[in-house]
Image 1: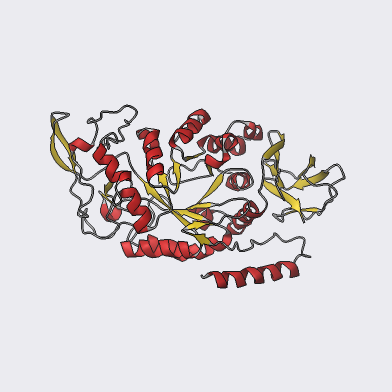
Image 2 (image 1 turned 180 degrees about the horizontal axis):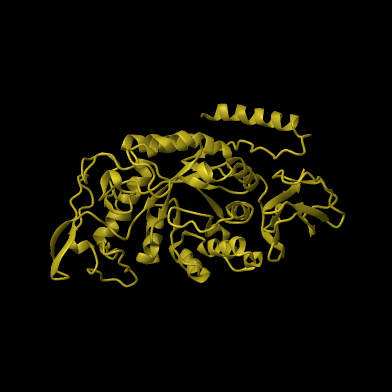
Length: 453
């Protein structure tokens, strides 16, 4: 969809909203975000962007996934999604059956007949390029999933470092980044670069040859993905397997957004890695605290430390992903990450299959248009949680994990101002007092989100 068409749709949506504003019992419908693109980077709404994890484990094989995602990009952009995270896009050992986490040829996007197929599980190179173009035409960034630790599919060769035979002879059809035993552990002369994964050959990032092909060369992996394929950022897989300096060097030499998968609930480790790698990190501390809070029946856990509280600009918050899906009260969790600081990520199956898409669209709209400013927690007990975003316009979110309606007086940002619940879960239109206090309500096992009318 081009920008002119989007602008007309935005204008139409505004007239529809004005015409229907008297229907107080209806949930506010998402207003189309007019996203523009500047060198492939989307211009974010006031509350910041929202990422879509555009896959799940074992998506349908057969080379249809890139086309499937391309067909959804326009709707996602209209709902307020500003970036999509794709699975590893290059040819892996299991060819057309692989989810990409066993990389063989980093430069084969469905071009070469190797590993038993020409296309990857997800499709052809042309289909991937079409998807990236469609995303950019809609002002949506595209993040590549990058596996830099373990490789798979090499032939057997003599390994002088183990005095044995290892599967370390990589002869890719692309003719780029040949690898041998000299490029894998235990041939490692630097510290802080270990972490064998499942017995696969583990790249030795201390080797100049490996560094050159990953991030230094103009035709190396990072710069080729960015400048030729058009990727705007990176999700780094299993960063416990190598030093944070690897991601830092990649970011310095290649650029683009980056987030690391440091699977650990220790917020000190998350913060330390993010600072050292000069990267965002998935907020596993927040993930596990939400599970304790919403599934464990103790919302005071939301008072605990999380990465987004340490540094919201380096925290990617999430409710589920392709590897882990333990939270049952998902809508409460999404109401939390889409009203609080951090960079929220939505899981494909939650959005497309399992949850109420209209409610998620509403939360995405609230995130982009109301969730501004620092966060103040106003109240928390086992069943209730209230927090305020202190920007303009800001919001108050009220989460209720009990089985009955709840009401509570809260201090807002707004004096003598009429407010409403932008989720439509409550039909009240109360006025705040001169001292900014107001009584709000929330349904059972639900949430309400308040901001000026």
